[in-house]
Image (cartoon, rainbow, N blue to C red; front, side, top):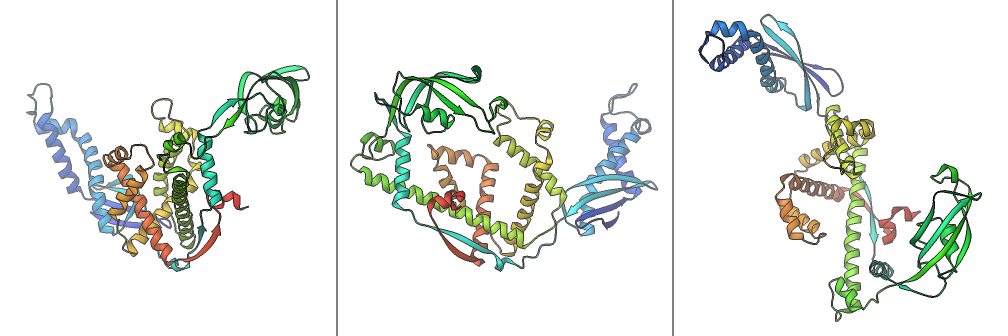
Length: 443
């Protein structure tokens, strides 16, 4: 077998392989022998037809199948002989006959050469966040709001009240689609309706009927209402105020796993622990994002196109699941998904993901990083702790090798980030919890 390697691009390679006639003859003879042992031909008992008859009828198809088999069999040999490491799947082309032998070409990409020579230049801004009493107050208030009740009142409606209203809107005296509602319930100030309509309810008691001018914004979704002002006839049917449970209410405390004896102090302590956990996760995510971004920026590499092609279907499948496109029963067909979500939507992300994967793999190799099994167990416990039945979640994960493999990959990536961060230039950035969790708040 003769092998010749050609360079056709930065990472593109073409492997030209010539298979000698004797190897083809041996493969064809072996296949014909197999066919002969089970062939059923008229006038002969099964498996008893003479070889000449078998050859006359099956030699061409046997040669075709033998050549395909030889391509698959000899490709690994040819790769070893050429001392090349393909990235992704090759494309095969049988280019012609060589005497009684044949030649094929395997086209593929190779992995890029990676030199990690700028790891000590990575710079990380690590958020430094203290949990304040006001942060705890906000969380406790949110917990109370989650268990709010509504009490009917006889006073005029105010912002924050829940109201039940009948309304009908008209534009130039004519009703329009979507402008009428009966017994509609909403909270004033929650933004469920246009501000003019919600604010127009304020100051009215149950039983009041009145008209409110409501201005529609210029970018309103209904073309016929954009920038227009409509008149809404409204009748308030009911006004209810929001009642929050007291912080030391026994039922409220019990809903959060606390006794009345433990009281509000224990609730605040628990809230602080929850906020610290959320902060720690956010800080970790922020540092990780910076480390990976800078690793990629400091070490630009050529990315094998074949690996990008392999990543595209995975990204499309993730997007399909995230958008709920496959919830209507059964998985959406790949060709339909590709039509709805074409490759170009994911190419940049696929290229970034592949490049990071190659760089992370090189860091693992050069830094001799090995997976910490104890950390995998810890990660599983922490992840399962977010569910009502953590033991069942852990059992489910352990029964699924694919899910455990994904968890191991995340843990190993975290280990890589920690090693890189340890050598990076780290500066503390004092922030509030709000700024950490909502980066837009920094503006």
